[in-house]
Every structure is written in C-alpha cells, then in structure tokens.
Amino acid sequence: MLVQQRIVPDGFLGKWQQTTNVMAGIFDVPAGLIMRVWPEQIEVLVSSHTPGNPYEEGEKANLNTGLYCETVMATRSLLEVPHALEDAHWENNPDVALNMVSYLGVPLLWPDGEVFGTICVLDSKKRQFQQRYVELLWEIKRTIEADFQIIMQQQKLVVGNANLSAANQALAQSNKELKAALEQVSTMQGELLRAEKMSALGNLVAGVAHELNTPIGNGLMAASTLKSNAEDMARQLEAGVTRKRLHEFIDGIGQGTDILLHCLGRAAELVDSFKQVAVDQSSMRRRQFDLQQTFAETLATLGNLIRQSGHQVHCNVPDGIVMDGYPGALEQVLLNLVNNGLVHAFPAGTRGQIHIKARLDADDWVELSVSDDGVGIPPDNLGQVFDPFFTTRLGQGGSGLGLHVVYNQVTTALRGSVRVDSEPGHGARFTLRIPRVVPHEPE
Ligand SMILES: Nc1ncnc2c1ncn2[C@@H]1O[C@H](COP(=O)(O)OP(=O)(O)OP(=O)(O)O)[C@@H](O)[C@H]1O
Ligand SMILES: [Mg+2]
Image (cartoon, rainbow, N blue to C red; front, side):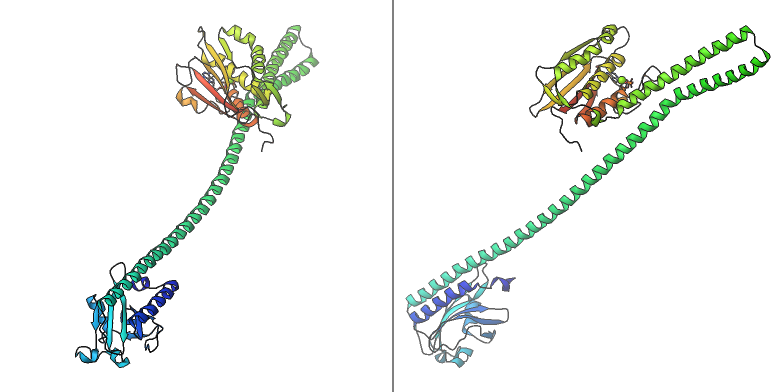
C-alpha cells in the first residue's frame, strides 16, 4: 500500500520536470533531481534536462551504499556537502564516481509523514550555496509536498469511486434479486388464488350435493313407495278390491305426491340459491344507475317483510351518487344483508334498527355499510360467515349461502371488498368498498 501510494500521475511528473529544470538553471548545476525511495532502492524520478547531467530518469541505485540522499532521508533534514573530496566522510560515496562532488538536498515527505525521497542539486565542482538558495530549495520542496496532498486526495477519490461503483453494483444486483423475488411472489400469489378458487369450488360442489341429497333422497323414497303401492293395487285388482282399500290407496297417493312436491320444491329452491352463487357477469346487464334510487326500489320489495318484522330500516344514501356497473349484483347484496339483519340480529319480541349508509370517497370509491343493533356475531363465527353453507339456522330455513353470495358479488362482479365487524351484544356491521365505476374488461 505504501508503495502504491507513491505512484505519481503523469501530469505531476511533467510539472516537476519543469520545476527541476528551472531549479538546476537557477542553482547553475548540471544536476537537479527528485528522488523516490523504494524498500531496497532509490530511484531517479525526475532529472533536470541540463548539460552534463549524468543521472537518467528511472535509474535505480541500491540503498546502504553511502549515498548523499540516504543521509537526507535518515536524518529528515537538509544536507549540504560543499566538496566531497575535501571531506573524509564523503570522499568515497557513489556519486563521486560520477564526478558529483558537491550536494545540497532536502527530504520530501508524504502527507502521512513517511519519507517519499529527496529533492537535490549536485555539481561537479566545489559549491557553497548562499542562504537564499537554501531557502529556495525548501520552498520548492514545500510546493512538491503540496502536490503530494493533491495526489493523495485524488487516490482517495479513486478508491471512493471504486467503492461507490462496487456499492452501485451490489445495489443493482440486490435490485435484480428483489425483482425476481417479487415476480416469484406474484406468480405464487396467482397460483394460491387459483388453488383457493378451486378448493372453494370443490367445497361448493360438495355442499350442493350434500344439500340436495335430503330432498332428492326423500323424494326417491316417496316415489318408490308410490310405485310399489301401485303394483300391489294392480295385483289386488285381479281378485277385486273393497271400496275401503281403494280409499286407502288414494289417500296414500295423496300423501306420497305431497311429499314428492315438497321435496322437489325444496330442491328447486336450493338450485335457485346456488344459481345466485355463481356470479355470471356476462349475463348481467351493465349500466349507469343512481345509488339512492336503486336502494329505495330494492328496499320497497322488502316492504312487507320489514313491516311484519316490527323492526326499522333506515336508508341514508346521499343524492347524486351515479354508479356505473351492475345494479343487479348490488341489489342482491343489499337484500341479503338486510334480510340477515331481520332474521338473525333481533331476538323475538324486540324492536331492532338497521342502518344503511353510503358515501363517495375522494378516490371515487363508494363505502357502503349495513349495520344493526342486534345480538351480534360471536368471535368464533366471524371468520366463517362468508363461507358457503355456514349457518346458525340449520333446519330452520337457513342454507348459509346468503353471505357467500354477498362476498362473491362484491369481489367478483363489483370488484370491491367486504368485511364484517361485530361485538356480541352490540350488533353487526358489514362494510363494503366498491369502485363507483366498475373497471371494464375484467380479467
Ligand atoms: N346481522 C347479523 N346478525 C347476527 N348474525 C348474523 C347476521 N348476519 C349473518 N349472521 C350470521 O351469519 C350466518 C351466515 O349468514 P348467511 O346469510 O350466509 O346464511 P343464513 O342467513 O344462515 O342462510 P341463508 O342466507 O342462506 O338463508 C348466519 O347463519 C348468522 O349466524
Ligand atoms: Mg342469510
């Protein structure tokens, strides 16, 4: 890392070359150098373009050989050698071999305090530089060290950029993964929905079969009894029958057909309500309709039933909500909800209130509620009331399809949602949210 940090961009090298050339000119020396230290060696990084300069750029020399620069780097201070051959300490140093006998140099320090190398001038003759030359050398040193700061900041920027683009890449990757996960979730959702629909359909078919079983079974029994009675009578006719026997026979036929009619009637009734369950949008007429008016008409058909029940139904739908969709579906929903209130909410002998409310939201959805102040729905049942065949009035006329029809119509034909809230003893509230305009082209 340390070595890596000392790599100098070309732009700076060019600039330092100029500086070194000018420096060598001012000092009037054959060699002005910028040296860079490596772990075992020292390298001529920049060498002035001056006549008689024996140093070449890129040249390297081993350390621990007694170079002038080694002393500068080790002491981190200025070294001035006016004439090596007059100085026992310097007379054998390697630069003397190049005839460089005088030296003036200062250390170059990297911003982190590590030694980068040196900047120096060398001459082939004895030199004693005046103080202002020494000051100039220090000044040049500071300029180059200021460049080191810039280099280091640039390097940091490069590293930062690399980190940033790595982070960007990681982000892009995780985005891709998220997208894939999302796609998977939505296919899974689709599959789940299909599976749920299939199992709901399966349940429904099983329920229909089960419900129809009773009237059809009873009807079959009645019919086969009638048949065997008729065969008996045919045999007895050969031998002659009494008037009393004939009367018994006719009575039997009457009872049998009564049972048959009752069973067939019940079966027809069931088939009728099952038909409601299957929401067939294509057979429904789409049109624009006024919500208030449609509700008023629907409630009118329940007029007798409501009066007889002794309960009160209040309809509070504002004027001017014009819907675009399937009024038939909405009528069926309202009928079932109000009917349920009348049938399930109020114990005999009480007088209950049912409130119907509607309002148009800012997002062009209509919120509808049908609530009562009756007995409410026990928490255990709340999750099941929309299931087909869930009823608490089994054998008392309840088939448990009313709310299932509501759910189907609201979610399928009307493209909305429905939920129920209830606390035992505090009534039940059914809340629907449906778009004022049912979207066209259902999937
Ligand atoms: N307003 C209400 N108050 C109390 N309980 C209710 C109310 N509405 C529905 N329920 C409960 O939810 C059950 C399911 O209602 P749903 O309309 O599906 O069937 P049902 O009314 O019993 O039979 P069907 O409507 O097919 O004749 C009811 O049996 C009843 O227990
Ligand atoms: Mg019902």
